[in-house]
Length: 336
Ligand code: TRP
Image (tube, rainbow, N blue to C red; front, side):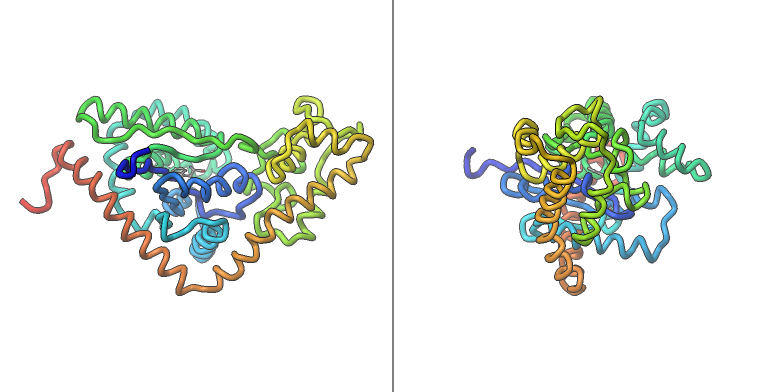
């Protein structure tokens, strides 16, 4: 790469809701840090997305700070990356509105996340929940993003973002960069500990997932209780041994060992030994992050500084795209 060549742009966001768990960590968060070496990264706390389902205000505020602390604890560097709250950059909501006018009801109705959430929150199927993907498209397109690191479940949202961007570009010329998903290789799908045919989810009961901030003894207890089978054979077979396979995925993701290697390691050993090894590996992975988290989350002045600087820099970048969008669509400039 030539020195003066501009770095490609990476954007991702996580919702500040509930407890971030091992699935979020392996599928998304832990991939964010290494990308900073190669790309210009923006990592947002997407609080506007969070309010598409009812939130307790005090808890939401706390969760936002908690997530920012976790970002930093997981190795995101505010000197290299932009770390900020989505709601601190009004251009997200502004572009989302414009994109709403280029998005069809039919395509939003097909989004699986909308269908799932509409079912889960049948008493509150609001317009924001329906338009969630256009806000996500705005997040991404505002910054001329090239790559979006996300879990597998977000692929459909990246696809609709591309469709909207292409539709807009076809009318107005090259306004938006067309983004591509970056899906983590392993562990994009970590399953529930109690029902390994379902994805690990933060809206499920506590003992079905390992929270990133769970104490080591809690992690060990949860792994010990994880559902397996009666065969006492450590073998990767999602169909017939979903529980063991899930623990193997977790073990593989945090140790870097392949499935064959893991199978060899536990030949002739029972699930007890296997589970202890999984727990040890997960604890070893999370402990340093937890220690940094405790330090960072106690430093409110630092957190304030990071979020303010991040929002200021993000707003500047967003303004460039927004002014282009305004001009193309025919909205009058503010300075006549
Ligand atoms: N929808 C994403 C999720 O639930 C979160 C998100 C919002 C996001 N905006 C984004 C992810 C932009 C990547 C890019 O996980």
